[in-house]
Length: 354
Image (tube, rainbow, N blue to C red; front, side, top):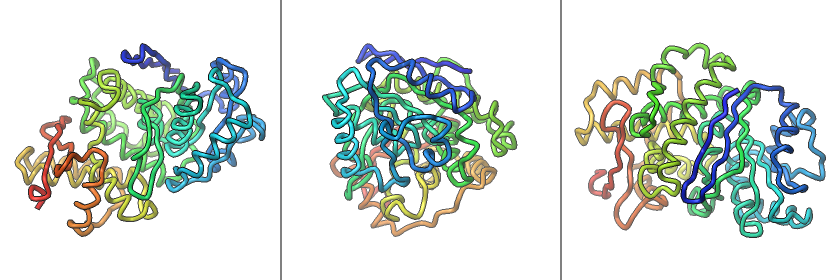
């Protein structure tokens, strides 16, 4: 078992992240031991409910089962969760518990942040993507027809339980989508300003077979490294006013890919890998890095056999990137590689991208 701690100075809040491979049947007891009030609402992914509902052991009346898919992160389901919380008469001492991937965590977290102006919130990520990314750091939100996560809040959980057993039943595509974010951390590691030298790039190259065969101990260590890097960033910049922007490496173009394909054709991780590839090409063209570093990037994504995504019409992609919440005036914000495992923020115009 690994226990990490996140300290948010602005809120004077500290909360634990617990990583283990204990039987899933022990999770309910762990969760209930962390409750402040007596009542709670579990927002759970439909797929997770089918696979682990019995092992988790929550009553039907305590659960809101959310269908799977990015399209479910919407106003309609946000309203339904709030209405269930009201029917259960949850108070400010009570808790909303998210069990599922990033969609469940983002939506349930946003509901928790706004219900009675904020109640307790517990994250139980069940996908690799959620384990290393969305469950840590307090970003919550919903999507609109204008784009992803344009409505949301920064709201830290009370505790995060990461159980690697959930990763055993992920299909290969969902596992790979999580690996897209893992690889992102390898290429931004030095910019995360961690006090530890974690060497994620080396860990990935030395353990590629164990990672792809989902060895639990190897996955636990890999997740621990990624979470430590994210904690280092989030503790220094909770609300993305500076350093935290580096976590958006690959996301400007990646989000545009998702929007262009109506969130139906590619997973988030697949789109982010394409976004990082776009960023590497842009960095080469702007003489920020040499081609050897780009070849190293190509080799890494080849080893993990990430899904290939075609180039879409540049003028349409630029238009979508201008809608990105990180865009400012006529500038589109990109995080680009500048050196080995280092990135920096660049504000580029449409003309720059031509």
